Length: 182
Image 1 (cartoon, rainbow, N blue to C red):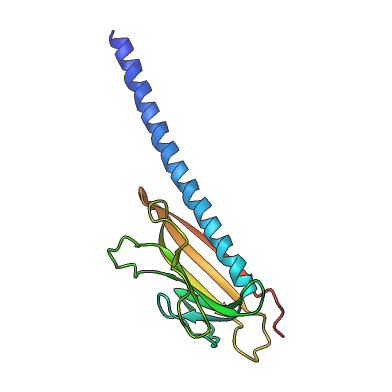
Image 2: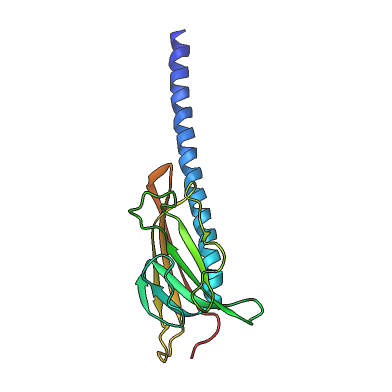
C-alpha cells in the first residue's frame, strides 16, 4: 500500500506540473496569435494610408498634418474603398496605463471624417480578458513634406496574458506607405 501511495504521489505531482506548463504555453500562444492578428490588421490599413502623424494621446487627431516622432498613438489619412471621400484613422492605447478602467491595456481604433467628427463606434483591437497590452510605441519617419523619404511606421508592442502577467511577449514590425512618395 505504501509503494502504491508513493507512486501515486509522484505521478500526480508530475501530472500537475505538466498541466501548469501546458496552460502557460497555451496562454503564451494565445497572446502571440492575438498580437499577430492585431498587428496585421493595423499594418493593412497603415500601408494604404498617407499623411502619417505621431499623436499625443488617446483619440487625438491632427487632420491634414504630418508629424514625425515616437509616441503611444499614430494617425493617418485613408480613402474609402471607392476613393470618393477621405477619412482619418488613429490608433492608441486607451485609457492611460494608470487607469483602473475595464479597458486597461486595450488598443483602440478611431475613425474620423475630414472635419474631425468621429465616425461610428471606437473599435477595440484586443480583448483584455485574453491579452493585456502593457506598452505600444509608434514611430513615424519620413512623413514631412519635402523630405524625399518614403514614409515608414514602426510599431513595437509588449503584452501579457491576464493569467500570467510576468510572462510578456514583445512584437515589432515596420510598414511603409504603399504609394511612392518622392
